[in-house]
Length: 380
Ligand SMILES: [Zn+2]
Image (cartoon, rainbow, N blue to C red):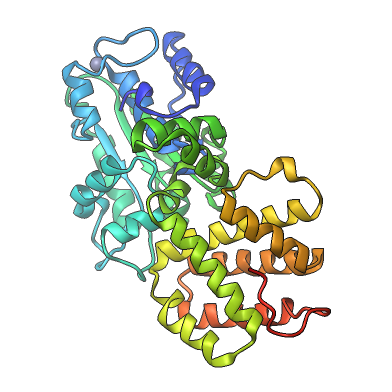
C-alpha cells in the first residue's frame, strides 16, 4: 500500500513521513479512527514506507522487493493480527490469514462486520485470544528475516480483552527494530495499560470532497452522485458501500413504503412488510438502509427549521422530505431519528431483525399519529 493509494488524509500522511525522515519513529503507535477513514490502510502504508528500500520524498517506491511483498501483505517481517472467530482455544489469526488478506486487499476500508461476513461468521464472538498473544510474542522475538524492521499491525486491539496484558512486556521492552502499529476504532475499549504505552496517531474523518473524489476515481460514479453519497457518508468510506449502486434508490422506495405502511396503522400490512421485506434485506443492507433513513429524517428536520440551503437531495427525495417535514412536528421527527439510531445500534449488535423492525414499526405508528389530518393520510 502506497500513501498515494489512500484517499485524503494528506496532512497526516506528511506527518507520518516526516517521522521517518527525522528518524523519530516511535516503536508503539496507536492509529485511532474508523477503518472507513483509512486508519488501517494508513498503518499499512506507513509500515511499507518505513521498510521500503528506495524511499521517495513523499511515498514508498512501490517497486522494490520489500514494497512488492508489503503491498500483498506477504513480507516475512510483517506480522498481522486481528479479531477472529475461534472454533478452538488454540486457534490463532494465522488460521484465517488467507481470508483476511483477501478481505482487506479487496476493501482496505472494511469494518468488523465486513470481515465477519467474509468468513461467514455472522454470530460468533470476535476475539484476539491468548494463543494469538503467545504467537505474536514468539514471532516478534525471532530475528528479522530480511534485516529491516519487524512490524506488527494489529487491527482492532479492543478485542484483546485482558489477554492483551501478555503483550505489555513486549511493547515496553521491544526487541530491536520492532514496530507495533495498533489500529483501533474505539479508544475507550482498549486496555488502559496498552493505551498508556503507545503514541497516539489520530485519524480524522475524511472531508466530503475526499469521499466524493474516491467515489469518482475508484468507483466510477459521476460527480453529482458522488457528491450526494459523500454527503451522506459522514466522512467514512466504508459507509458509502451500501449507498452505491442500485441500493440507494431502493432505500428511498423502501423508506417511503415503510413510512406509509406505518402511517396507515394497519397491523397486518406492517407485519407483512417487516416479514417479507425489511427482515429479508440482510444485515449489511439493513444497516445501510437505517443509515440512509436517519439521514433522510435529518434532512426533513433541516427543512422544518427552514435551512433549505443545507439540504441537497435529488428531486423525489427532496419532495418526500418536504412533505414529511410539513406534516410532522419537531418532536415527532426527532423521535423517529432516535428510534432509527437505536435500531441501527441493535442491528450492529446482531439483534433479530424481524423482532427489531416490528418493534420499530410499532413505535413509528405511535410517533406518526397525526392530529389534524384524518388517520391514514399518506404524506407522499
Ligand atoms: Zn520500496
